[in-house]
Image 1 (cartoon, rainbow, N blue to C red):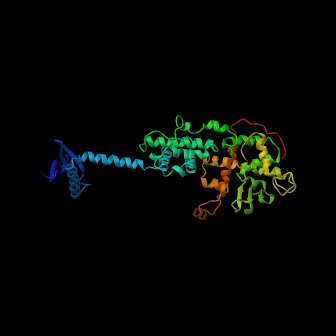
Image 2 (image 1 turned 30 degrees about the vertical axis):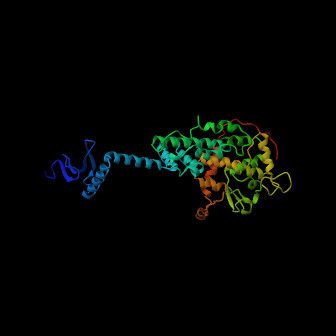
Image 3 (image 1 turned 90 degrees about the vertical axis):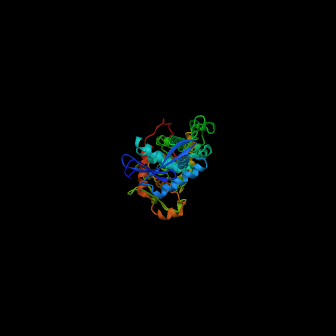
Length: 395
């Protein structure tokens, strides 16, 4: 037979070059096993050289000598390889794939950034590099337990997102079995319902969805404490930074409050961008100013005390702390805004513990922080719950 004619050309030992009617050429291995004649493809002539084809045929003969079907062996090895590849996808990779495949269908383009920010803050430190197939209930609880009672709204969202990602991983073949992040009939046996947690008092921080309503309540009061507490919320500053603020730190023309290093926890000067409402509060305080302190207390040459702010909260039976509004802001920045995490961290004047990152990031991201605080102020103007009046009272 000519090399161009359709048919089989024997090389020996069960190896053949097969020529199709179209002229394409491929290697096949023909063998008998259990009185059955079988044929196994070894690849095209273009992809597999003669020497490689002979090597593959030799491997097939070795398997046959042990009573193993070469075709079944090859298929089993492929299945193992696929299973191994699937098992090796990490939760971070699964999350990125889920966001990428679903973001086109989300109505709000910000959702993808919100998902990524939330997962990066709460889930990745524990689950990020764990294989999707290895995530169990104990790992999910490790993520949720630290924030379930203090950041219930955020924790509930994190749980839901983990559940959706793991469901995607299961459908995609990356894991098997029940979803360890499912609520009904599973985690509800280990953790109290989010709705019940929201009604529990003694929370350090107010859920960010309730802060806008609370600000409306504050505006019903006329005391210095009310203005100071609203200023704390609008700037996301530490309570002592606000209570100790001096007029020489305020620049009305540029809308800037510069807190000197000696009054900062991290001992570094902190520039705070002031939104319009914050400037309105300062203008109101300046109109009656009789002290170097922006928010003066009842005693001469003394700033307002932290207990005065706490008293405002207690009058309406809110068990949050003034400092806790920083947590409310951080949760909002992570859950609702699409600003990078490092911008929110700079707004909170958190010191970067990574010395290498800190060395490279010498700026304070002021322009981005300015936009972040404006977005926060805009969000706070949209209260979602009923307003409980605060009795008008001076500090």
